[in-house]
Image 1 (tube, rainbow over the protein chains, first blue to last red):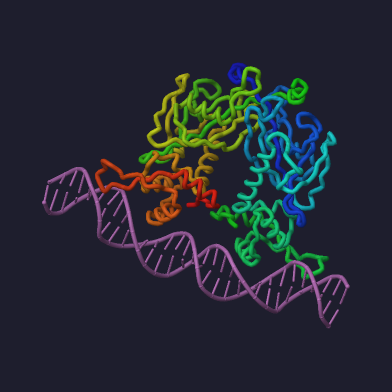
Image 2: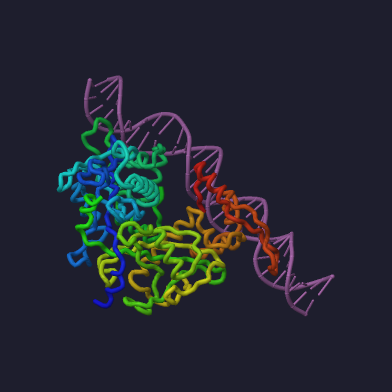
Length: 241
Length: 241
DNA sequence: GAACCATGGTGTCAGTTCGACACCATGTCA
DNA sequence: TGACATGGTGTCGAACTGACACCATGGTTC
């Protein structure tokens, strides 16, 4: 082991952080993004994405995986209950952080409506949901605006060819809620009849009761059927909307 | 600056490498992948992807960007003339490298047919092109098989919705060459007439003379028209094949 | 120079998919 | 009981997709 180790250590190492674009969907406010207010320099008091440095073991060797680091930061800084996590891209411009060379592995995460309880981090940082465009009423810290832009693009693209939108809704939902979600993310209106026809034709949604306590005709509720989806994928099916 | 720096340095840092899935297309052999034989432990004498550690400045701060590191490694280890480069994913499992904690930022790169002159690296490592399936006659070093798999998937997906395939061909090419490329990457036969109709309907290809010195009717040559593509994209066009 | 051979280049049609479009149903509340 | 808000349903023309076969061209061979 000692011999093996010689090679890598000739190089100085960058610090490595993870930063998360956490999306939530609210029926009234549409697609929202979680930002936290930084307490420390650099960019103290500025809004930024939740994130932090990847932790290594004390010997500087093992430690947490990148995904685990992202989940940990989300838990610590927002208390969010993450339904979906996906790595986006690694940002590594030499001067992106004034403290020195810091790489940021960017993640996109989704939480379900009604899992939006947000709390400040352990260090009492302030956290809030903000509409996706105009994140935080202005520019975010570091290159986080670019990260958000990439996250939005990825979410828009992926919503159309992967069944990830369900992770922004409660476990059961009405088709109109699903449609509103798609309209909010894709930023264009969809035809109700065409939308329903296509999504139901995929046979991915299972009926799950009806709405209660609404002041109008109660909608049928559906849940995303993971098993049906797995079966279909196995048979060569591709989600597409 | 000194004050700003305190925060980041409390954490031990991982080593960060870039590894490149370099694709080439040969009319006879189809899609190929460049691998190099490692000279040093770990995995000495095993085939691996070209790559190496990201270089920081002497003060451990600035240095090269990740893209630059990938290009530098490709140049140093293969002499390849890269036509396209795209970051794929960052691999960061705690034990993926026996030397300790090493993250790998994976890249996909494309070179044009006839830019395939490959030479060993400055340290005389051996390099070769290998068919994409069965890379190197067996398993590659580290988790490089997983990286290759991801690269292939990305190339297949992206070939259909972005005009990147042209980067695997000479600057001018016949439509049949382009079709063979698509067939090789997507692993399925395409209908000649439908293929020609669709690709030409996009108005992205400009005529560029005819083949010479072939023992049959000479094909019209085309080049990818970057400007036309930029114009179309600006007008809301999406490449799709 | 005629025949051969390899590849280049072309159009149609049926089946499917896509997008636009309007009205009745249901349940709560006033 | 009627108003109101949302749920839920079918058709049709246009556009697109995929399957399909033959002549053109130009160098090579005999």
